[in-house]
Image 1 (cartoon, rainbow, N blue to C red):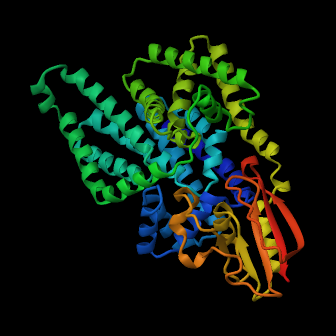
Image 2 (image 1 turned 90 degrees about the vertical axis):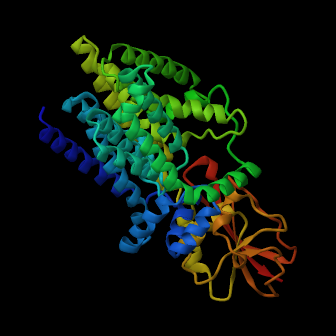
Image 3 (image 1 turned 180 degrees about the vertical axis):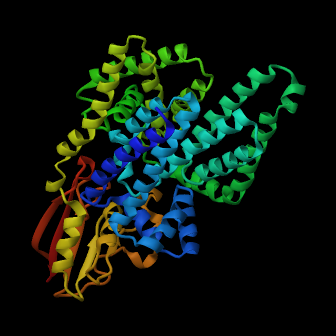
Length: 496
């Protein structure tokens, strides 16, 4: 298959899948992390950088999102399409990476389509966060690394330095991917120069590689102080649960199926999947001749190993952060299938792998019953119609405060109820100002006032007691899509 034909076929599939994704892009209500992105994107550049430094993530995604919003608006469709845009670029650069890896256009095409239709990938393609940008940068930096190693030309190493720097400035988890690339670089140079120090120093790849990492460190120095502050506040208040024996199997199940299967209930599927993955990895590594197979393997293994080691002290293990390993996990499994000698068995297994990926997202989407769970989108729409000028809107949880603030068209400034104690940083304190907070319900209210109270039964659930002289007039609930998000509860009170 020619390169031109493969790209045309891939473009055809991309158009079909992206058209489907765009048609459902706004079906699920904005959630807390996305609302953080949305509200930050309308700040000035100076304020955006300052408030990003108060949070836990680096600023590159927010800077690019800010530019995007200035051009295309901060509508929910626009915010999520920004992620979709990077997802499409990731699929295409993945094709070129695999082509560079194996020099096989047909295999590169099939692998890219498998990434395109993967349910876990689609989930984050439709989320206004930095994950698809991060995937793109990890794949692109890996492509530049191979080009630099194979050609020994300075320009590819310079591009590599810029992309790994952009990766670190996008998500700190990408450091694990950069470590994997560095380990492979050492392995590759060792094959060329063995134990000779003189040969190492004369080796262009060693010199250019050293320059690339030095330049990346140099470019990160302006953010180092902010990173150290972010790390210190993360250590003070944390929320990620500790790892257990099922953490890694559950992650691979999600990477494979998108999370549409109840992992605890079908534990035997996790065990079976891990056995099959281990067999596929061993089979691929044993039978693939190209040394670049180790780069692909390391890009999967190092993030899991690194997260596991860090989690011995403080858990940093979170399923969605392993999205950066997804392309390489799929590539290694697909390669194991591709090299099966029996043509009928090989084609059958590849067909089943593609079919399974193709149906996993529709199955997951149907199980979510999105049309019955409008969440904050419907709650805010209700409030936008019912709230009158001069009425009050209070929110009981920061985990729905920002989502309502994004949808709010009432003309009334909502206030977050924070009685006395401060909020943990992961609740979005970086976006809060004193005027956003109320500490006493009697502080701004008087007799005959109408007060609307917004609470959640899901994550961050805090339903404060209201004063006895507040008389409930009515209450409505709006279910969110995911179980951990629960229901948005809107209650109308009149102060007697």
